[in-house]
Length: 315
Image 1: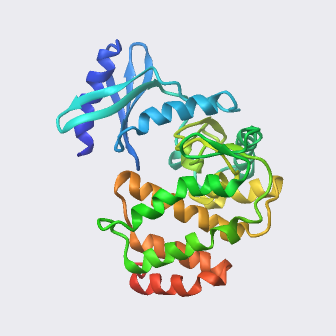
Image 2: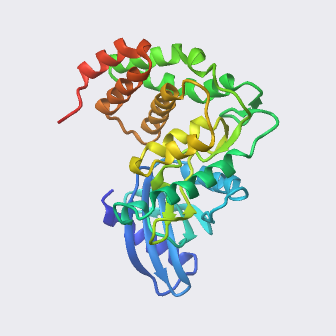
């Protein structure tokens, strides 16, 4: 759909919810969907559309799980349903707009990136301090005391999906992921500690900020669950790396040896999930991440070299 195709459905949905004197103030395309910001007589609101069936229902659950333990405000959904657009059904929800601006509208460089990082780390540590006595959560909601079986329950379907006949993944990348799966026990063995409540996508663009760059709200969780904190924090380096969010977290919460490799291990599987969810695929992107992994774990050098040769990064 073209961006403008979302405007009429957003206005109709907001009107059906009882909002009056509606004006569109902004559109924001996102990886998983599209957001339309509205001004109404009752205040400022957000209409969010999803590209993935069922994503918004799970996001509502995720928001409710996190909000009880959040230092920062989080969105509250007012209404959620499928609506009919020009090109078919649209999974949609409506929520009040939280105060704050997105990361890409902040001054560059930030006036005080260390303070911004500290506030975000405080939020991350608050979520991660919440654990479940049953251990680590599986994709079906079950728990096990050990981390590895829980990780496998989320990841095994991803491995299966990239090896199907219709998968876009090349032979070189399939071999690289086969190696990644085969090494899972070795790579995850150093992980210790209890489970943590994880946002599952806490990069800098999933917070809102005041004009000085201090975070004032947290948004857009993905598959919230009781996982290991390392499955959350690699996202901190996904955007605005110069803010040093990941480094600041590690300074306050030291990690087990081997995180430099596990960062890319978790990130690669996370990208397979996104590929599966919204039919996105960038072979050079995956190859580059395997190259990053090989720099800190030589066991992946051969598969990384093969993937890079097949999918060189475009200049």
